[in-house]
Length: 282
Picture 1 (cartoon, rainbow, N blue to C red):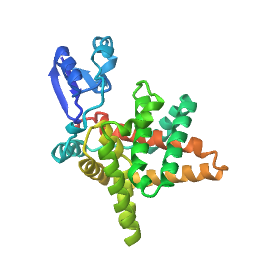
Picture 2: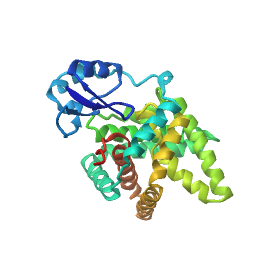
Picture 3: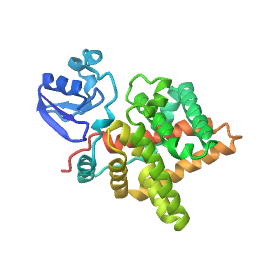
């Protein structure tokens, strides 16, 4: 019998292996979901258990979740409450260290994916309003590519365009709403804009794509969770800006390393906050 962390971030079980295989087919859990044998304390990826690793190719869902099944406000609130009830700890140094290790281990693929994303975002900015609509569709695709690398899944260059699949509409709406409201906050009083940048821009694209949450509930989920340790995430953002500045000053070439490093560190932070099981308080 197993305990497992579902796609909604909640703990389920004990459940038999056959039931877990059914949940895999239904997309309620994935092979990257955390699970443990009943009576033990060690959490592992479901794919690390031999009885599931052997059948991974047979039961993995073949397509991303349909846009019609996006989770709404009630589900997003439940995920936020679950995370905040146990709180979370974010080790910025660890995120940066693991991000750097990921970049050095996958240097050219990550540099190529980041460069392609950068070129697409810049190219879209040359068309009136295109960047407003598409910026986070492209950047969400880069996050998705990095997330697959982190989870040990096969990542391909086509994953950069994953944002144009089932999640296109919510990502586009997020891109429009987040940029407009953030810019408005910056112009009116600066501080509200900075608050919204930290609250929304770090994790919302990944919440939409990985947790299959609609755009506004995903934005609220991100804001509520980030708000618990907003100053810590603000410091994380300042460090990332410093890394990007150093990369820019290095004749611009340093950005080819800075961008994938920043992205990888952010995705590791997402994993630590939103998907990894947190120890129960004593």
